[in-house]
Image 1: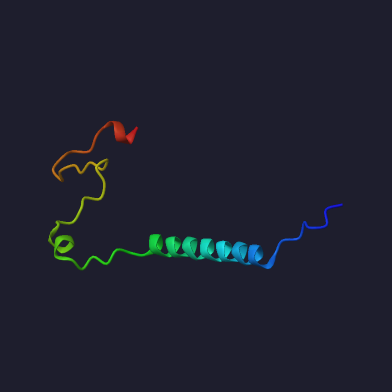
Image 2 (image 1 turned 60 degrees about the horizontal axis):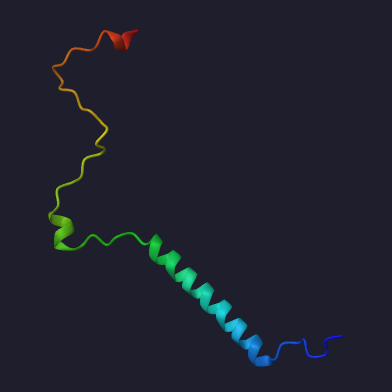
Length: 71
């Protein structure tokens, strides 16, 4: 039916190169995204430590407990 439907060697080679290059690029991006920041620059060490969360409210120790909390 279709006598020349087989791919030539150079077409197969190009397909293999594209697949290998794509996998190498993907693996490189995954490994780069997984790296921990170095944190050794002066700008990183000069910053004050960040707060735990903006949503956390710390009450002063002298505040009496709320009556509604026991209910």
